[in-house]
Length: 376
Image (cartoon, rainbow, N blue to C red; front, side, top):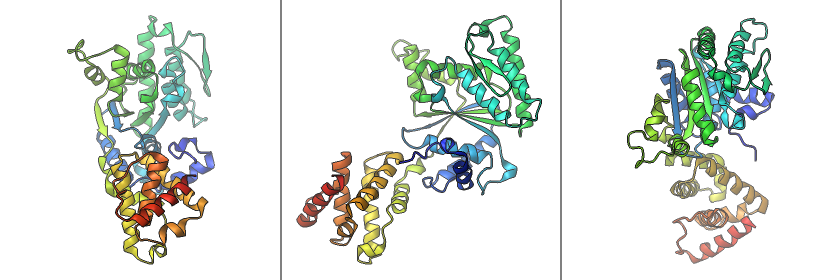
C-alpha cells in the first residue's frame, strides 16, 4: 500500500495534481486546524520557534506536508493573496550528516534558488559557505559548494560570518512576504546528539526577524531526548532539568487539536472507508449505521492511532473482497457483520473488543468461522 503521508515523495505530476485539493483524504477537522494554525502564524512576532506536539502515529507528517503547501497557497481553495513562504524539511533524512546546519541551510538555499535568473540568489549561499568553510567534505548546491563545518565555526571570523549570514537571510525573507515558515519534521526520530545540535543551531544561527520555525515532535519526546543526551534526572538536576533546558530553545508549544481524534472522527472515517450499499443490510439504513457505529466504537475504544485505523479498514476491505464473503457477512443475521469484524480484530491484530459476548450462539460461531477465513 502506498504511503500517502509525505506528499513531497510523490512524483512531480502526481504532486501537482494532488495539491489542487490538499485535504480531500485528510481526517475530519484537519483542514480547520490548518486554518487556525495559519492565523496563529500570521499573528506571531518573529523570530519564533514553535513545537507542534501530538501522540505517535496521529499524522504529523501527513498534516505538515500538506500544511506547507497550504501556506504557499497551492490548494485551489486557498487565498492566493494570503500565501506565505514555507519550507518543509524531513530532518531524519539528513541524520547521518555531521551537522544539521547543512540540512537547514540546504533547505533554505533550495527555496531561494528556484529563480535561476536572479543574481541575488547566490548571496545567502556565499554567506553560508563562509560560515561553514575550511572542512574536508563538501556537497554541491546550484551555485555554491557548501562544506561541512568543523573547526571553522570557532575561528576568529565566526562572529562576522554569523552576522553576515543572518543579515542576508533577513533580507531575503523581507522580499518574500516578510515571513518564512520553516517546518522541521521527524526531529524525534533523529539521533539524540543530532537532535540537540539542531536546537542549538536554530538558536544561534536562525534567530532572524521574519523567520518562524515549527519543530514537529511526539509529545514530550524532546524532553526525553535531552534527558538522554545530558543525563538529566529530577534527583540530580532539580535546578537545571530538561524542561528548563528545552525552554531555552522553544518559545511556544502547540498541540494538534484533540478534536481531530474524537469518536465522531472515527465514525466519519469508518463510514468513508467501509463503502457498503444499504442493500447488504436487507435494505435497512439503520442496520448499516449500527454496523458503522459498532466498528467505530471498537476502534476508538482500542485507542489505536488514525494511521493504524486506516490500515485496518483498508486491509479488511481487501480481505473481504479476496475471499468473496461480502454477501455472507452482510446479508445474514443483522449483527453478524459486527461479530465478524470483532473476531477479525482479535485474530489478525490482537485487539480485544467488548463486542464479543457469547449471547447469540449461532452468529457467534458463524462469525468466528468467517473471520478465520478472512485471515487465512
